[in-house]
Length: 508
Image (cartoon, rainbow, N blue to C red; front, side):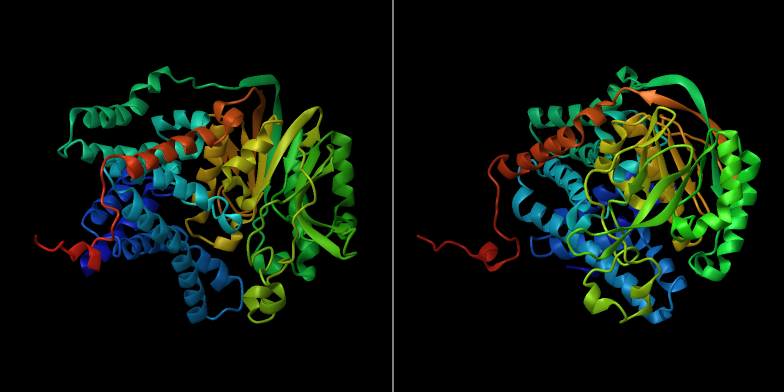
C-alpha cells in the first residue's frame, strides 16, 4: 500500500466536513464517499481497514476538532495532553470506518459492490447513532439542509439524504463502467429518481395551529469559568434579569442550558422579583437548570441536567443522552481525580427514570431536547410526535469560536425538516434562533454577545412520514443495497493479497 493512498483517504475524509456547516460546499457531500470508494477499488481486503481508518481520521479529525477546545480551554489539561486526548478520541472514532471498509471489501464487494458500499455507508451512520450511547454527528445528509434535496427529509430523515448523496457520486461514476443493460438501468434509475420526484413532493406535511406564539430567547454570554462559581451567581442572575424584563409580557421566554447554574431553591432569592413580574404580565419562563432526586433503591441523591418551566407552564424534562466526561464520567471510580478534565463542574449527572413527557403551556405541548440530544434523529422524532413545537437549549461555550455551533445549528435545522415543526434554539453564546418547519432560520441573535431575539411562531399539528415510520424504511433500503453486494453474482470472498490469492492449483 502506498503512502499516497493513505493520504488520499485522509483528504477524502476531511472533504466531508467541508460539505457541512459552516462551509456548505455541498458538492463535496457525494465526493467524500466517492473518493474512498475509488481508492478502495485497487485495495486488498487486508489493506482496506487501514485505508478506512485513514479516511475516518480525516473525517473526524476535521469534523470534531472542536473537542480540543473543550479539553484545552475549559480544564487545566496541558496542551500536549489535550492534543493527545483529542487525537485518541479521533482515532477511536475512526475505527468505525475501519470496520465499515473491511466488511465491504471482505464480504460485500461483489457484482453489486457500488450498491453495497452505499448501503453500508448509511448503516454505518446509523450505527454511530447508538453504539456506546452514540455520537450522532457529521451525517452526510446534513449537507442537504439548504438545498432542494431537503424536501426528502420529512419523508426519510437525514439518513435518506445521506443515502442520496452517497449514491449520487458513486452511481454516476458506475454508469461509465462496463456492465450489462439491466445493471445500467437500475443504477441510472436510482441516480435519477430522487431528483425526478422532487416536483411531486409535498412541502407542507404539517398544518399550522390557531394562533401565533410570541417567544423571546435570552442569550447571556456567560463565561464558562464563571458559570459554576458561586461568587459570580448574583452577577449572572442580574444579567439575565436585565435581558429578560424588557420582554415581560411575551407569551414564552426561554433561557439556555443550565442558565440557572444551581438548584432553584438557591436561585429563588435572586430571581423572586423578576419572576413575580413575569407572572403578573402572563409570561411563561423556561430555563435549563440542575435538579436532584433521591434514588428509591440506593438512597443516594441523583442529579439531572433539566429543562423546566419556572413560571407560567408546567413540567420538567431531564436529559436522556448524557455527554461522556462532560456530564458523567465512565469508570468514575477509577478516573475521577486522575486528571482535572475528569473533574469538570456538574459532571455527575444521571439518566432519568421513566418516559419523558412534553412540557405544557396554555394547552400547548412542547418537546424538549438539551444540547446534543437534538442530534439524535429518533429521539427527537419520538418526542415531537405529541408536541406542537420543539425547544432545544445548549451551552456551546464549551467549543469557543470553533465550527461546532454552526454544525449544531444545521443539525437543528434538519430536525425541523424531519418533524415539520418549529425548532426554537436558545444557547448561552450562540447560535440562538428560530427555525421554521421548512428548516430555514427565520431570525437569530448575534454570536458571542449578550442579546435577545424575539419572533412569533406557529404551533403545528399532523405528522410527517418520517415521524410516522421513523428510519426503518431507509435502513431497510440500505440493508437491501448491502445484500445486493453480498449475493449479487459470483464473487471472490478470499482476502486479496493473502497467501490464498497467490495459490495456484497444481497442473494436471
